[in-house]
Length: 578
Image (cartoon, rainbow, N blue to C red):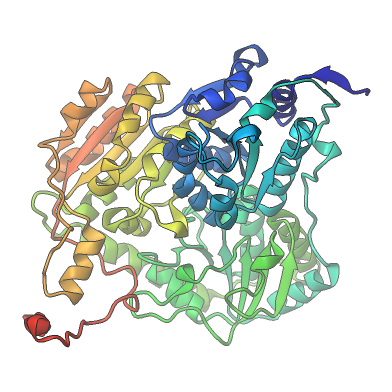
């Protein structure tokens, strides 16, 4: 195919189409209007939001649901810098994404002109790469590179283009993605596969830890077959509760903060761990409930698509740089040759089952403790009881959102999209909007504390504008309760900055913005209210008035320590009243 005369804007637009991009999210700005003007004719929808941070969270979730890299755009300078938090979150989450970043025009660079910022330097530490278009003729080439790196390294890439480079005439050939990037990864080194099979086949207490890579490659069925052959219980990585079906008899639940004690006690006893599609993050493997559950003596087989993640946090016996699904298929094949039929260890299965039952009983009993007016755990239990199997649930960060890790269970097509280890508040609701765009027919629910809701409620207007029937479940406890718990445990109940004087109710606020608003203050009403909201297929805010004194443990007991005051004026602060 010969090169064709076109403008840089046209080259960018055609490259987006070649990548299968059907929408771009952001806020309108003069810097990219020449490109924006082409979108309707090209068939690319522009999705405006109320704040650019929301655009990043929306596309993060969109990518997790579809597997296609999301695309953001904004005005040069402040429009793009508003995306810093959500791009950093996507980077921590290993979510492919391309940020089209107009920058100041080349004739004025360095003069501190209107809305000028060195966005390349700002984004270097929170992206897989920052790519600056050096000449208008390279507009399409550099965008192809951005997509190539985003997919290859599983994360966001900044595509920086001076605003005057959208204009002019260039000769360009629009390539198909297979001509410049690889879409499939292999199973990894075959000798390492064979060693993994040998280790697993001879293990006495094998455990599988299933992670994001299993979700992304849709390989839970293969993981289940490996588990059944080995009688290996399966734990999910932190905040990836959807990485193994909860109705499978070998399901243990998630590890990590507010995860499953059944999972953690079982992982602690493992002699061989198959960690599939996971980086085994530090925070996701730290001790919880006073259980130092990640064993030093276990032989770990770690499979991750990114070589940087292998043995990064825990020493491994075998490291496989591979696609989780392809590696799992080869491991299964090897195990089937070695173990023709499942060798069920009934005694071990009995122990696993008793742990599952005990964990279910514990969290149910905690939920049934009376609250004033609603125990947040009770609300989470009622929510889980009525969620459809194909529900997509997004969770924020914070005391209640994190407690959801104990209760949320997924099977079928259900998905869990969490804020993950970057841990920023204000994630869940815009992420839910992006998930709903990705799967218009799915029921989508966001679990949000009222602190995080203050950072995202403006996007109710976005939900109404684009008719996205997401249900925001807002837990109203009038405080930043994760931090309040720290001030209880370490600072003698001195609450500074922790209380949130919210409006009387968020329900009428939602109604004023064009959505449905429901307020619940009785635990028996939580389930029916959620079912009603989901059935309406309208943007809805379901406000749950919950007890702000019923709090989960601190995120990390090692993150703070009891204070010591040395200056006389502060000595009284050392007095302990507990």
